[in-house]
Amino acid sequence: MKSFLFESIYLLSDKEKKARTIKFHPEKNLLRGRNHTGKSSLIKNLFITLGAKPKGKLDKWDEDAISIVVFSINGEQYKVVHQIGNRALFSKDNELIVASGNFREWSDAFAEVVGFNLVLNNKNSGSALADPKCFFLPFYINQDGSWQANWDTFSGLQQYKSPSAAILDYFTGIKPPKYYEVNSSKSLLQKTLDDLHQEQNLLKRTRMRFDEKMTLSGPKVQSGSFEMEIAMLTSEVNAINKKQELLRESAVREQEILHNISVQINLANDTLAVYDKDVNYLKRSEAHTQLECPTCGVIHEKSFLEVLTYADDARSLRKLVIELNEDAEKVNSSYAKIQQELLELEKDYSKVAAILDSRKGDLKFSDVVASLGAENAFKVFEEESLSLNQAIDAQAGEIQRLNEELKALTDISRSKSILSSFRNAYRSALIDLNLPVIDTSKLKLTSRPDISGSGGPRSILAYYAALWSVCSGTYANFSVPLVIDSPNQQGQDDINMPVILKFISQNLPKNSQVILGSEVDTEQEFDKKMVFENKYSMLLNEEYDKVKSVVAPLVDRMFVQLQTNKYAVDES
Image 1 (cartoon, rainbow, N blue to C red):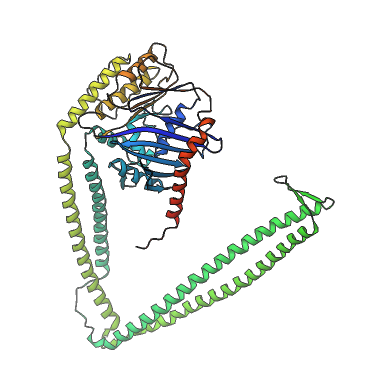
Image 2 (tube, rainbow, N blue to C red; image 1 turned 90 degrees about the vertical axis):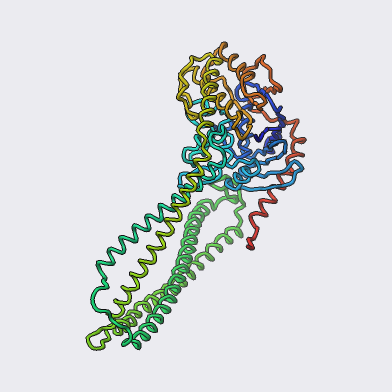
């Protein structure tokens, strides 16, 4: 089982000249503070930095703030730098591994370094590696959404087709990672097979319609008597096609030039319209030596030279408009000439018609062409049909092989064992959280509870605890931090709130890293407690210089690499 741990986070705002560093214990952490003291902002930045944007806004947060999250996979440390959508991944020794402002590229890099190989189907019938949102989805209870009946933890999950079931199967071990790789390959093959069947049906319909128009029955016509006409026809058609292609290319170029000229004329005319308004304003303010901008209020000197220069710019623009109109007339004339030449090609096509009307006895050359064309067409139909049938057979055979592989990867006894453990853990958690016991025998991993009142949040916590129990079980693939933000939802009273805090402290899987954000303190044991006291000021002035010295070099290297990526030349 791979172990993912949050080690620390650095936050820095150059605008406010404030910063803060938080180091996490590998087991139980309590972030305590009243509303608006920054607990949720800190927790959300953990996930935003790694590419998983939680639901809910960061209240009064500097959008240009820089964050660095230090995490480890099986003891191997990494650092992720984030600012305004740009991210960079560094090794423990600050070696730059990747930098990107593209979310898909970043998601693939994150999946590779973490070893997260879940493949999901998207809504466009394709597939892609699951992104960081999917990695953290089962392990983070976000105060803005997760305490309800739906999976509203992160923004952007709608790009995938029913992702929660596959994510839970992956982390609980019901279906191993290999299953999703094979299933994704099967989905792509099935789509290709469906396309081939559609193409086959279209070919059949086309063949039937062609068969109604053309026939191979009756006497066969021979082309030997028309060898001269065939040579003439080939020469004429080739010459016409070549000339037509050149004329059409010229016509397209002239149209593009005309479009560009029109754009420039419109821009110049728009600018002149603005100039006319400005001139009227200047005339109305002749008595003043200073000019106040009516838009922004800035005071300008209204010297004769400045007014003269302004007028000179307008004269240049008007001259440019005249020249552009002249150019447009020339292009229009050239385009009309090309169109005329294309019309004249019709005369050349009449030569082709004359050749086709050539007769040798009772036989017309057009009959020979039609006969040979039909014969070749039917031959092409047969060849294409054979090729499609072979491709369909190959795709169907590969899909059958993958179905057998998927069946082998799906162990019914393992699934039953995991579901049984989940149901038992959920039942036990309900009792521990002062909730009535329900029949859990038919619950699925995706069966989020939907209970109103103060029992709702406790039932959600019981559900997550049951998930976490099997996600850390025998068949699990990852150990991921369990993050719980603000469990005091919907008016938990002085009886139930201590029960919740005790449950989080004592009943979650052993050796799991837990990060709890709470408005109230607790006597329960936590390995590290951090207190947030200042409203809307989680960052501190006194930490700015120290954090800046750590953050700045990494941010500089990130943006240098991003610029290098932008101007890199692909020489492959």
